[in-house]
Structures are given as C-alpha cells and as structure tokens.
Length: 95
Image (cartoon, rainbow, N blue to C red; front, side):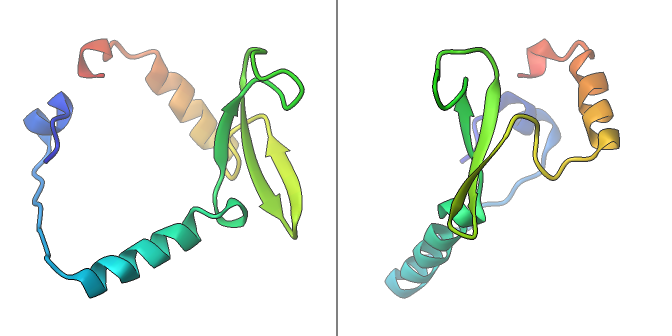
C-alpha cells in the first residue's frame, strides 16, 4: 500500500498480491542481478577520501573497474535544466 500523500490525491494505483514461492524466487533473482554494482549506481555523499565532504557521487563499475560520477550519469543538459527549473516550484507541501 502506498501512503505517500501525493499518490493518495493524484494517482490511481492498483496492487496485486500473488502467493507464489516460485515467482518470488524468480523476482528476487532478477532484482539481485539488476542491483549489482556493474548494473546500477550506488549514491554516496562526499568523496571517496572524505565521505563527509559536501556533494553527491554516483558509483558503479565498468569492466571490473570502479567508476564515479559527480553529476547525474546518463542525464543530458535538457533534463538537468528541467530538474533545476522544477526545483524552483513551490511544491514543499507535496513532498
């Protein structure tokens, strides 16, 4: 169940409960594969040397080597502009 206040007011959501150990195991296996370091980004604060430093970093792995970004990876200038613009809107009551 979704208790998010925005969702309660503006979304139409449907939930389904399936009681299947086999399906559950398959979903868990796929999820574990999707969130492995080489397939996802881990969000961290600061720098590798100083995690208390200001800022965010996206950490992943490519060809077995650690890779780190200091801006949203795979996001173009238009999307960054849109996110910056939307951040100025008065929606604090919706968060």
